[in-house]
Length: 463
Figure 1: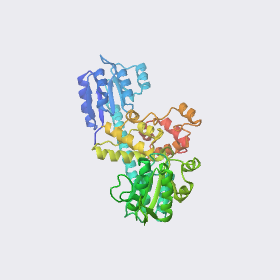
Figure 2: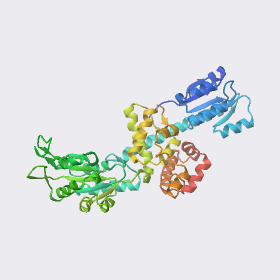
Figure 3: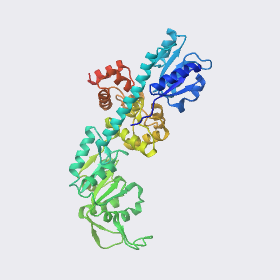
Figure 4: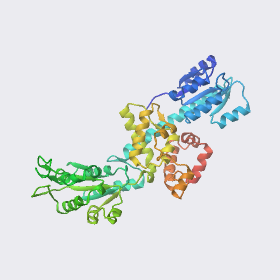
């Protein structure tokens, strides 16, 4: 677990005050960054990555309220405490409206300041503990490279375990980026052919005129450029598994020969006379609706029926949002190790974005976004703003009105969405467990008010 100390930004034009706070905060376990004025503080916001800021209200260049606005705009997760020797009700109200954590009068009530700084430090520790727990649970949930806690993925894992020892042909369906190749690998690894080869061909990446040669091989002189006899992928996979990715892209002539090879267990090289017997399990995957392709005359119905002895459907990420925290934990851990960084995961606000994003590219897109944000981020947590900068416009959470207009139904990110409610209930339950039932601590960890948390608990039936 990271031992990195939280950072306190102190913005005050009085050196004596800065020195006093520095010594006090160091004793509480903070690293202190001091700035002598508001303009200097605003100029260095992006580089400092402070967890909490203590800002003087009255400064000659830029006042504390302006600094507060700048901090909230740059990093909404940074808590801000305003301090002043000329307190007034109006400025206190304005500070709270702008998102300040508290408003202190000089000379300080150091007991109150200690409470505030300790609460920030403890919240960081709780967040660190929660993310570490999610990362550890992701390890335990992993099955052949896939992670899924929800019922839909656990059901898929169960089917793979049951079918792997027996099936000779299988069809894996699902949208792009859902992990269809991982399902094919799992069928190979869990079954009796695990010690033999898994041969993969992407049907969309092979030139149409070379499909037959790639699958079945060729003899020397069979066509221009065939300077030597070469076995095809079927023969290479003999005794193991042949994975045909994007099977919907296979040309019709190659489909007929593939069907014959599966039915008879024999392949004939291009230009050859003799047939070669092969014993290869065939797993095909597609992101297309093959039944619609059959109806359109682009795919053979008999090949579909032959492949579809067992169909394993991989759900899109939007239908398994409860798995997003664990997938995120696994990807962050992997990136932190690879890039040699101490990054732990998202802030509560960033996690809400992860849970409500559209993810048209599914798990692959989530992995790519996490990798990008880990490359760009050097702090212990990545923020909502940093995450949004790495999301494509198609993936960003949609405003409720736009979502409802687009789909003619409740928005995915709304409180009434069944999918998001499951993820939200699961997440809040874990946070409450981590906070040992302390609802005030849980609300701070979730980044919401205690009243908002109570409303969520009532709505989700968690009271």
